[in-house]
Length: 176
Image (cartoon, rainbow, N blue to C red; front, top):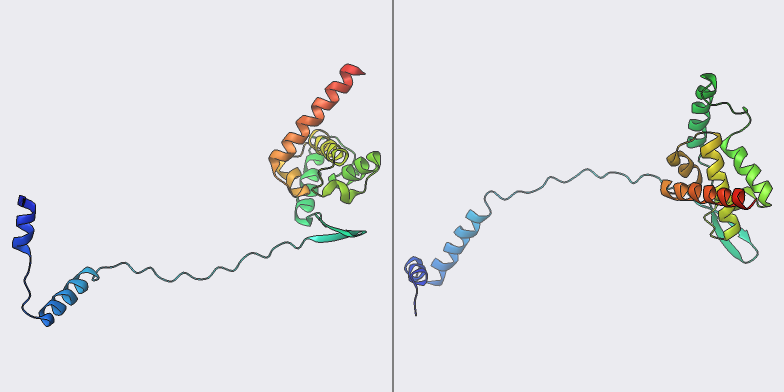
């Protein structure tokens, strides 16, 4: 059964007498379709930023990546700390810096500085790293993102580490 719509389509339907009529008709249709087509301009190629090279340490047969201290963050930290000390907002010894705290924590736990700054998941190394996070946050007043940048990780990892170390200190105080 034919509906009104199909009847209308049949009325509008063009009957071609020759193949050349049909080809010329469809060429015209294609030309009309593609008249105002948006063609994006080619984008200028943006060079990729240089990637930070990972240092590798070989221990026996194993090779593992080592995160190096990023000098940009160390200089920025030391400038801001100098300004805070000058304003007497934070009273810390001049020799106490982020690197110094990492060194002290490494000595206390009998690890190398490299062990604490690598993404190792060994429980004792993680506990030492969390202590370093806690000391940097509470003794120097450094923000979580800055501590995270220093260690090459996310600020939420530092936040988690600080809260874990605080819980550990509370347990020691309750047992102690």
